[in-house]
Length: 134
Image (tube, rainbow, N blue to C red; front, side, top):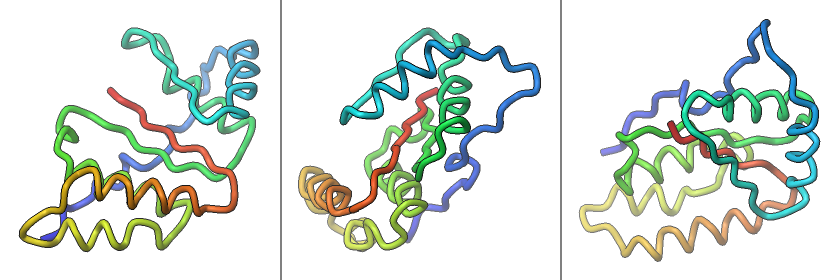
């Protein structure tokens, strides 16, 4: 049985009209895009989501966005959502892992993660994966 997807968890939040721009941070994010991983960490309410949304609006590129919350702390649920987000960039990614998630006995988590990472590495175009943890 497949896990239903709440589609709004896969959307980049729209920018507010009263946005306070942060050009220095946008520039730092652009520099970070040349690396494999950029982590933005701050307390709740400091504008992390708004910053990344602003950056993506200024520097559009293929983006897989996933807003996560406490309910996503289940491997099958997380992988379903992650694959749904990645399919915005590469429509056929994760089909094998989705099949495994339907089986009565799940393979080891390492096998599913390894398969998904290998598929991500096969995507020829650059893309951004945002895991927005609330």
